[in-house]
Image (tube, rainbow, N blue to C red; front, side, top):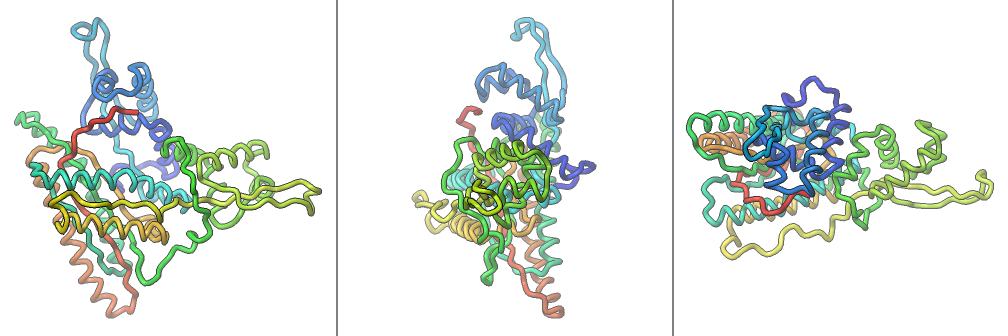
Length: 413
């Protein structure tokens, strides 16, 4: 996503850099907030919590060391700081994984990551739809449409969608500058962009059937379980290999090396504990001279019993936004089960929290509308091209929305 935000950095290094944010849940909240405005550790703690001021300060420091925060200015001593100096920071980039880096992640990890992200944002999307129905000042209702495109049309449509992601933060910066002169209060916006391949014509990713369903969700927060995989080449290689076959520690050591068997054993155990692999079979005897060998396979999330929808609030039943919400939930869930959601690494899934003035709102809504029209026109052009080439159409489900963000009521972890 948003190539201008990751220019000049190796895709593998981008994954390692992201692991700094993911390894502590508090850091994600810090980066999201500080990409909207400058803050000090004390300000953040007073507004959002985070355990203790010392803990928040330590995580500010680690994020700054990792290049996620930059020092803007310092204030003090004196005043309300009781003689201390207060340091203010801004985040350097929003936390996201671009398509080049995403392609380095094994399919099972991509699928589980996307599913956990959807479980976080779908309830918030529902809440925003309900709030918009209560006459919020700003917003662009959710739309969900499926287009039939050829390969060229697919690439142009998804590129256009991801480019909007980067433009959102440019709009935020423009709004901030305008507000300095106008004094206008900025409002928070939730902007939702999603474009993926839904299930169509019986399509299913072949790897899905080879994965083991993870029935028990580990207790550790998801991002903390993801961080070690993004950080460590060996973990990435183990999980990638276990996507297509059963793998044991001795077997992996014989074929790939990478570390001693005790180190590999700890990696396998950690990946099992994190829910990334599951035990499949134990083989005893033969050339192993009585010893047993435990094999593992990569996991996939348990999806079928999860219900995103539920009954709508009174007055929403039958509304276009609610019908779009139900359609999106159904399409996304079916695609996750079949594996088509993450079959392609150039799909888009983003939820952006930004601050806008009135002009910014108008620009964002106009940008979303123009994107919808652009993809519809691409479908027309793709139809003409496919009539000549005989290429089979590829479905693309697209969900677009912008809402006035609900007020934060929960403290940071």
